[in-house]
Length: 417
Ligand SMILES: Cc1ncc(COP(=O)(O)O)c(C=O)c1O
Image (cartoon, rainbow, N blue to C red):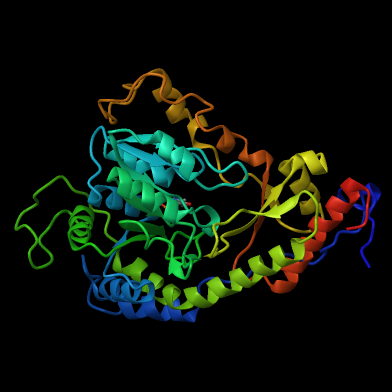
């Protein structure tokens, strides 16, 4: 039978925590990675570009995601940079992006001398709101970059409809959404090109790394050339560097690690999904607590397990709520994604669009980045809670997480739930 908890029962007030055991963790790299590196290092020398591991990784990515072209890169940030270039983004173009993201989503826009334009997120979530994206489209918009925060799907049907209407490119930031899907189709395969990160915090890890996937041959070739010095390394490539490019290709060392991790990714994703789905099942019937909203048919890959805290009902912010849950032994935190327009770089550009000698988009106007450019995103931390998980966390821990949330809500509301 449901129990009515009192505030004095809460661990934050000295009560017994719901989950006294330590939160499960464990290794992420195993003997197969060591064997792969040993194999690589026992050759005469590491290859310079298009090594065996990189080429095998390309094939494996294409096969797993069912996409025609994969281009591994040195990081997720460079994957996005490369994808934006391949999508034709250049100086003065506007790229509509989420204000709740990692700097990696923004860096490439800056480096191409394009202009980040922030669309707001949904009132109750971390994800870009299609209605706000629609409002931000201008004749200068070149691309929309949906960020699938935490492995949760942006409404891609809505984004693609807008993109078709306004003839703009869609570059999906899938850094946090490996193997997340929408109606059975992987995120990152809806737009014109997708970009992933495989840094050490992601669903799969390769030291550093990233990759780009597309079905468009021309974009794939541009991405390949731009990331690899524009050198003639595939049939049909220009014989000498034909445009300004970078060297941000993936090394064989990172690719050898990534290749092993990619094999584990489907199992690891299922483990995270088991946690997330169980957590949401067990949250049912708790007033003031909801799973993060999702479009119909979405299966997140649960980089976090996100939930919404209604202050009107519970009388506390997500920050206060999560602190109480944390004391119950569950790693909960509020507002897991930072509000980018508050960063110093945007505060400076707001005052003076020419403040940085390395950033000359031309058309950027003074006053383009008011602090409250995206009000829902600015206050998202007051509503959004996240449980930090990895593939090591169990369904039992998901149930304990929901029990902790239920206990805190019960104590706050003073009734059995
Ligand atoms: C949403 C998002 N985009 C881009 C990146 C950049 O990836 P990387 O750190 O591999 O450069 C990250 C990394 O945390 C991210 O979370």
